[in-house]
Image (cartoon, rainbow, N blue to C red; front, side, top):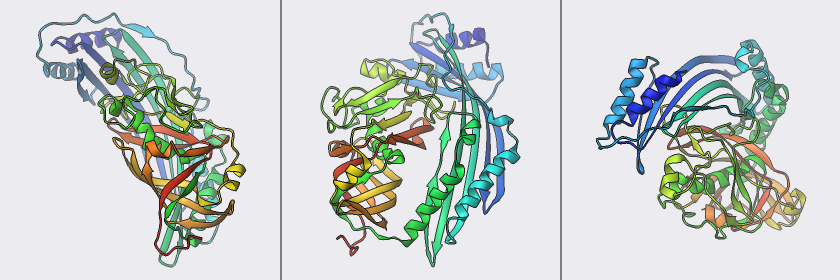
Length: 465
C-alpha cells in the first residue's frame, strides 16, 4: 500500500484546482476460481488486481479517475489529470491524515489461499456426486468455487486514513434435469465474508441435493395458472423481491435525485404495519458485511422501515451532500475501477410472529413461491417481474401440486403494503447485486411472508382450481 506522506501529496494535488473534497482509494485483490462440469474441473484461474482511484467533489458534482499501475509517477499523473477537469479559483486546505484503527468483526480462521487446490476440488466433487445421486433425470451439474482476499485503503481530505481486509468464499451449484426436449434448472449458492472454515461447517452435499431436487420437481410439474391471488414467499432468497423492488428505491442514488417512489416519504406509512425492513452491514462474517464501506465510513445497522413507517435511507458521501444528511456507511463499489455510490449490504425483512404452518393454513388458494429466480425492476417506479424457480399451488390451506413457469408482477411500494402475514423463520440467501458502482456481494433475507394479492403470470389454460 502507498505511504501516508505520498497519499497526502496526492490529496493536495487533487484539491489544487478548486475541488472541495478529495479521496484516494487503493485496492489490492488476490482471487482464485475453479469450475467443474460433469465431475471434471475444466477451468481454473488465479489472479491479482491492483489499482488506485481518485475522486474529487465540487459541490454536488464528482470527478473520478483510476489507474491499474503501481508506479508513483503514474498515480500522480492520474490525480493531476483528474484535478485539471476543474478550473476554479481557490484552494481548500485539507485536514491532517489520522490513521483510524478499526475493530475487525469478520474473523478469518483459515485463509482460503493457504488451502491446497486439491482440497477445494474434493469439496466440489462431493457436491457434484450428491446432486447426481438425486435422480437419473439430472443430466448436468456445474459447480463454481471462488475465493478472494482484498485489502483496501481509503484516505480523504477530511483527514480519514483507514485500511480494511476482506475475505470471501462461495460455491455456486447448478443442476439440470432433462426429460425429452425439456430442461429445468435448480441452483444454490452459499457464500460468506469468511475463511475456508465456512465450508467445514457447511453441508455442501445437502445444498447440491436441494438444487437437484428443485430441477427434478419442476421437470415433472404442470404450468402455473395466471391471475390475481395470494402469494406466500419462502424465507431466505425470497427476500430478493424486497431487495430489488424496494431496496434500490431506498438507496440515496435514486432518492437524492427524486427518482424513487420513496423520495420525500421519511416518517410516512409506506408498508403494512407488520413490515420492518433493515439493512445491516455489521453482521459478523455475513456475505454482504464489511467493517467499513468503500469510502472509509464504518458500516451500520440501518432500520429502513419500522412497523410500516419509512425511517431512513442508505446514503453515501456524495448523496449525503444532496440530501443534507450524513453517510450511513453505504458507499460501495465493485473495485477501484468504479466510483462508489449508495448500495445495500445485508437487507432483510425482520421476523414477525406468524408461523409457516399458520400462513399456509390461512391461505385458501394461492401460490407458494419456494424458490425465486431472476427478474427485472425499474427503480424509479418499483415495477418488477420475477420468475419463480420452484412453485406450488396452495389449495384448501395446504401445499398442493408443484407448478412451473410462474412470474410475479407488481410494484414494490404496493406489494409491501399487502404483506399481511410475517413468519418468524428469518433466513438469508447470497447474491451479487449490480448497479452504477458495479457488482457487489449482497445478502437478501426474510422470514416466510404472505402477500394478500399479487399478479401471477402463468399459462392460459392451466388448471386454476
